[in-house]
Length: 190
Image (cartoon, rainbow, N blue to C red):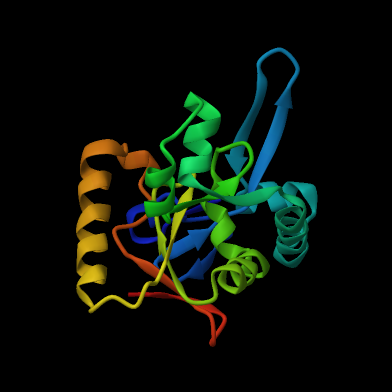
């Protein structure tokens, strides 16, 4: 999972994690509960000790899982179409916003680590793009249209407003705006 580092500093004590920008990457253990589905828990240092696993092995397993997890980016209008049926074509052309996350639509913001998919998206759109932290469950991708610089401030304002009004505190990922630089092949904070 990925979560905001500063907001979760206390929770991260004793839990192996890595930093990326203002985020923390945290391995979780999924437990299959025969009667009630499944649950997840953070992997802590005690678990590693009792299972005889070192952190390097843990991160290798987490990386392997990340490479096998099914992530996708899909136009927001395409998702709406799947949910409600027909959408006005003129609306579809105007909306260049893309959903990016896992196919389960749960804890999918970890997709920010999939640089191969980010590179593929940049190639498809032919340029750089913004990564909007919608929640811990998904990200939104917005192609950079080369606006006059006001775009960053407007998007940051939108992130703050949506976080405050629509996203529970536990599911907020960040108030920062991220940017994928195609030439550098890296994500940065704007």
